[in-house]
Amino acid sequence: MSSKEQLSYTDGTPAMKIVTKRLDGAGNRTSEVYPDAGGGAGGGGGGTGARSLVNNYNAISQLTSTTDGTNTLASYAMTRVRRLPQ
Image (cartoon, rainbow, N blue to C red; front, side, top):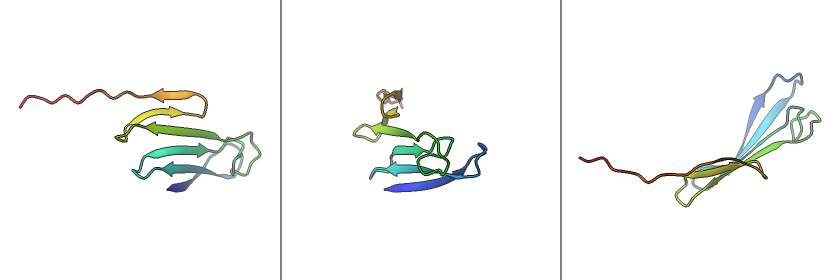
């Protein structure tokens, strides 16, 4: 499943920017592609390129990391759930 969202920026260029998001079957956002400030990658401006973010999930749909293709921007570790005494 994928969707597109149009955002308008005031960066000096009167162009609409399109953010493309992809979801897996569980509804987790697996990737997002943002156009560059100059409007590249479908933004209509002539910039140098887009920024792509990829989210990775474990088997139980918990977010484990976010990368930009080459760099890990964030990684997450889940701790076990501890029940409170009743």
